[in-house]
Length: 179
Image (cartoon, rainbow, N blue to C red):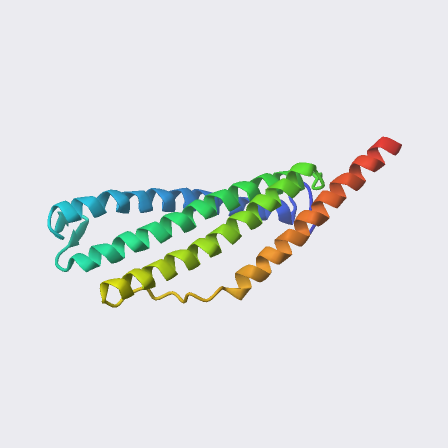
């Protein structure tokens, strides 16, 4: 199977990326709904009784819901950014012209989003642990505050790919000028 052009592996992958893009927007919407439900629950004293969503009891449950909703919103937003740029990159692959200067910029945006997400994850987890320690309680945050080496390795690979695409675009431009 070909890698570039119509009917290629790139075209198949773009369909999958389009689906992920739609799911990412759905996730953003769901996290925003949680952002609306949280204040409603606080206003009702920690009790929320909606037909599809019922929660009783401890207000700390709502703190966990808000924390999880914020993290979910951050991840969903990053997924929208990443899949949007991937859709644009794969459109150039399907068109048979991957080495355009915009693809290097798109890859920079992708690795930037991944890096910001990882730094944000660390900040949120450290903040939650710190706040819990200040308040004298325990946090229910299950994530580790250590950096994810797989994410950092992925960022490194994306940085290299950005430079490869930038160099490929420059070489393409030079070839087009000499012809």
